[in-house]
Length: 147
Image 1: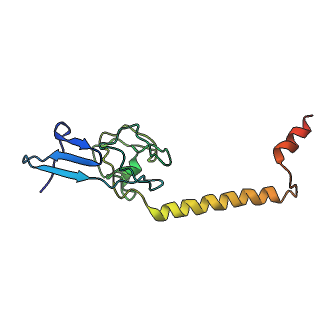
Image 2: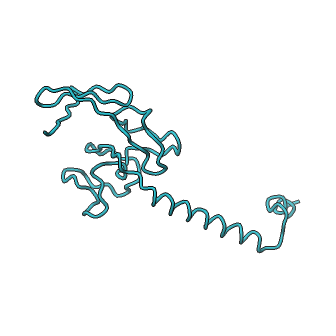
């Protein structure tokens, strides 16, 4: 049975969406949506997500292509919705009318890879600072040059 969500017949109470199908049946839907970037639970936010909603943990906007059920990196324009306008930056806030938040947007493996890259980058710059042989504070040393 296909469920049609009409904006005029859907009500949202906390994390439960109460909606009426085209056949007049009432359905309750809860969401287990997580942030696409950090994986934080978004259960405290009510559906539908506002265009300006942000993740409470990482403060990224949530109305982005990578958070949408229509996002698919393997198809042309990376969107399965034919009527949607093309969005160039998939992780930036947009005005897409076809946006539907996805419960599977968060990829833990991708987060692990990103965290490892951040650690490697930090280690690279820490190693560069240590290789100068100057154990002191670089800002105070720079200020001494202008005295």
